[in-house]
Image (cartoon, rainbow, N blue to C red; front, side, top):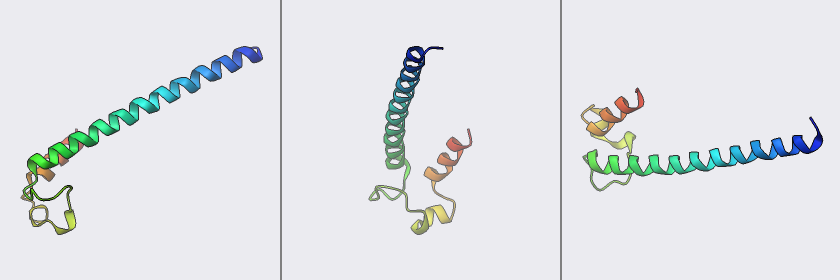
Length: 76
């Protein structure tokens, strides 16, 4: 393989990596948005912006639907 072909090959690989990272970042943002929406829908403490497991009586007593569903989602 010539130097020029190597350089071209490296550039293509780098571009593919960059595109993959951009897609992953976009997907991560979308997942975060969905998690926030999901939390707002199912958390019994409507005044919170995110789950506070150490202070949540519903989570401690295993009566939190948000946590129950979240566990099921993550085990799929």
